[in-house]
Length: 333
Image 1 (cartoon, helix red, strand yellow):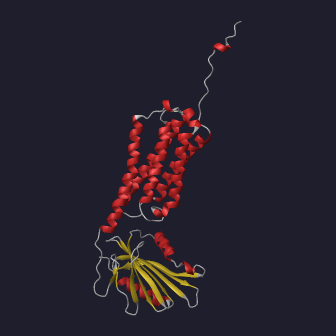
Image 2 (cartoon, one colour):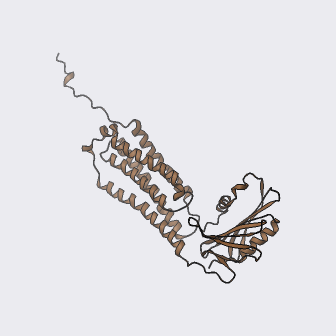
Image 3 (cartoon, helix red, strand yellow):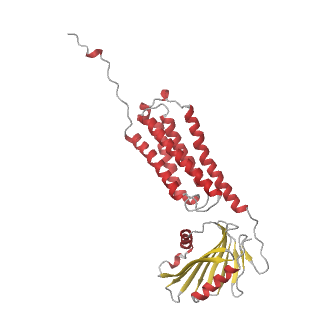
């Protein structure tokens, strides 16, 4: 009988994603979900103003669009679609651009130049994965260049994804410029000191000097011999939560005192001339005892806050009286 085995066409080898390409798809899926979770848990506005909710809404929309792109990309790679490589590169470019905009969006701990190490890592990995998609033999075998396509819906998706972070960046920029230019700089009345944001008076027994800083806000330092010294600064901020106040207090704490035991004597809130006050009294176990009074007076009408940090070797009662007296004289407009 004639051998007909040679007449049967060979079964084509099934193409499948494997190795580093599988890991790339895992990174795409996990990264998009992680971004969505972080947006929901850490970006929810703490300030009840229009810009905060608008920025959060666009941020959330961007995170959802990123998840949609990730699912679309994974599906295209697993089912060997002709637009898979384009979608993979698009995902990487979107991440790259959003990290650049994050870097430019402010000068805060988690956003702006303070986020430089994390952003640099993300940018490096974006370049690594983009290079992989361009040079990988597996990608070339699964998706030959002559078979690759870009669908019309992919172009629309690209336009939306690039527009969302750009709009978000513009909103951050408007808020930043608005906060700095919404009000003219304060001019001091007779006997007042001002950094342009807040104005105040101090007791005559204290010497006071304005310090103009290139990198930070201008501030005033005051002292009385070796027994009292401190700072007053006015900034724009509307976050009045206790958690944020405690974070600010930790950042203002004198690091040279880290080796000494201390106790928090008092921490409370109140009102000073219809402005919200948060104040904390700390005593360090030194010889003599060193008291630190840290206070933040928030003005809801202007979006400003006056910060007073006072160290004193006098009694904690006299230090608190001094700070409270200065807060009574604070003027925001």
